[in-house]
Length: 68
Image 1 (cartoon, helix red, strand yellow):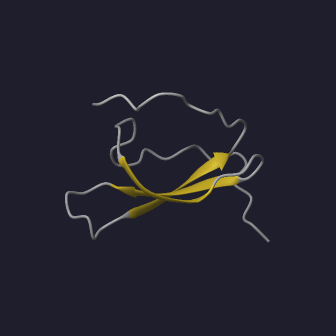
Image 2 (cartoon, helix red, strand yellow):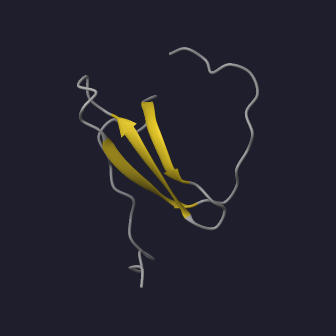
């Protein structure tokens, strides 16, 4: 059984709000938590896993991503 996170405040995570390199996507489905592997450091051998709150909507993007 999954833990109940209701009522918990979101944590301030390192480099929140910054554009980061997505290493891989483990899962992202409506109604479930998304799980991403991201690159936070210069060293490509060190990655971080982040889990989101429940996915409410998935939108398709068009065009090339904007450069930072």
